[in-house]
Image 1: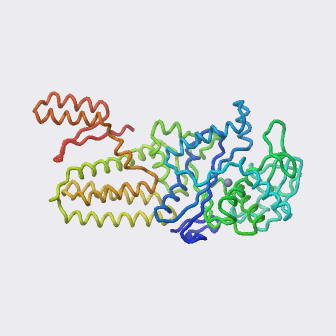
Image 2 (image 1 turned 45 degrees about the horizontal axis):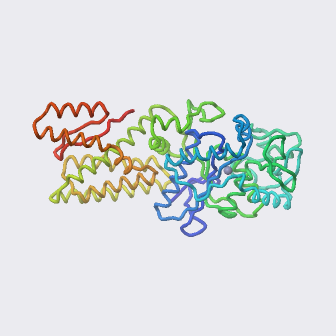
Image 3 (image 1 turned 90 degrees about the horizontal axis):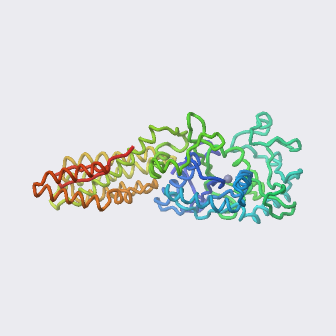
Length: 472
Ligand SMILES: [Zn+2]
């Protein structure tokens, strides 16, 4: 597999440190509120990377943290008149609700910053001993001029940063360099705080990821991933802390996903132009949101618009219908059905798997992976209309579609089964009986009732076939 490495700015073959075992660290959410679709993109994208590696029988150790202490947490908790811990507990529960429904596998470790304080303090102590820190009125700082490689990920040098100070860099008179950042913030009145050798306080944002990845994955990790906005300063600062403290390379492959945009602006809480996953799921369903995210390449910007969301709805429905249709054909196939065409279908399935893997091996090209699945869906639809295919080959086609979808985290099987409720199927049976008894008035009445409920009945040579109308 090749992935685009932001450190070297090129596609590289993914070679893990340990044979057949990949370690992945993904920057997780700050748990002060429900997450929006822009936040969801990295969760879904890197979950898909993990699923694909598992599909290829690679062992994966996956860590995604929860930032459960920072200014946003403190402000929100104060506004709600609850403790920061209560807010974090509540929002982590809500995170799991949405992430589980998006079919994002739980990480092997979901560490919380507030539960990693000893490791954070240890790393700051090491940095202090090695001469990378200095103390100001409000906290312990990292001196970026002491770390020769500072800027190697974001490709800026210190002078660039002096010239173009970003808003995320606090302008403090006393800082030695503009890019210097806080490792430990001293306690302010009314804020949660932990003991430290430098006085009570709380960790800075960047140090938590360096400490957590070291705790669970060691000094050097294979893949570190997150949104593009984290390249600078967050990931640059993680590199500085970890490499300065550990004296070893921190990350072999850096992966960053593009933003989800609304009217060409990044979807963000601060911009007020955000759509919560919880709300969108009520309208489109979680599967369609996952489909929508993956039908674009992860490094490209993705526009949040009605049209591609509708396209995702229809695309996903097409796959579900196809699985449903094949299941119907299997149930009604008989042993004399065509073996020649069935053999050709088997070849087509093998090609599909190859095409799918080629796409995924090429920097996780999920749009091309979907195209491979759709080619198979289209092909089965055509050949199954023209020829009576054997149950065996149809089963292979069905299983292939279901398996490749599951690699993308989409459960075509569950949906297809859940699609038609038992009472509706019962009505379809009653209609069929009425038709057999030439009671067309009853048959038509049942059909109309089912139509009104959103179900369509087609009479096929294999018997009546019921499907759900697409709602969007
Ligand atoms: Zn991080």
